[in-house]
Image (cartoon, rainbow, N blue to C red; front, top):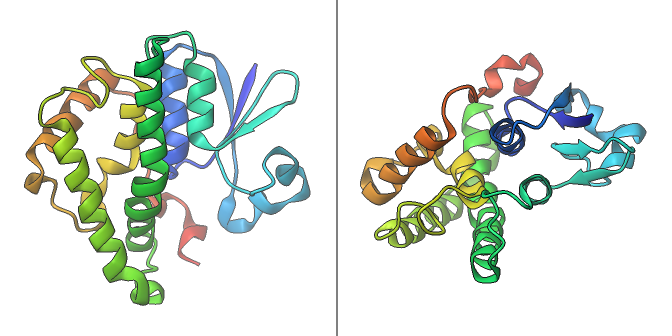
Length: 209
C-alpha cells in the first residue's frame, strides 16, 4: 500500500489527500512532526533530501517528493490529467505557476500570518503582498471565460492552485475583489466535495515555537 508522509496543516499535503481520495486510491498516512524536526531526521531525508512534506512512499520503498510531482504520478491515466498533449502541457503550465507564484507567495504569507511569524518577516511583506495581488489578478484574467483552469473539467491544475489560492483570505487578500476567482473556488469546492478539511496550524502546539 502507498504511504503518504504528511503534515495536516500543509496545503501541499492537502493536495495529495484530495487526489488520493478522488481516485479512491488506498493509502496509509504517516504524520510528520515538522516543528519537532522529524522531517530532518536521517530516515526522512532518505525519502526527501529537501526535508519537506508531503512524500509519497511506494509499495517497494521508492519515494516521490514535491506535491505536484505526486499529483502527476497519481493522476496519470485518469481524467484529472488528460492525455491530450496540449491539454497535458496546459496542466503542467498551471502546476509550474502554482509552485512559482502561489505556494511561495500566498502560502508563505498564510503561514506567517497563522503561525505568528509576520513580525520576523516584516522586511519582505510588501513585496510578498504585491506578488500575491499580481498572482490573483493573473488568475482572474485566466478564469474570466473558462470554468476551470484547463477547459470544462476539474484537473490536478485546479486542485494544486486551489489548495493555497482559496485560502488567500487567511492572509488578508479579499477574494471578493476577484469575482472570477471566487466563482472558480466555488466550482472547485463543489467538484471536490466534502471530506477534505483544511487544518489550521493551531492544531499543532509546536507550530508557535
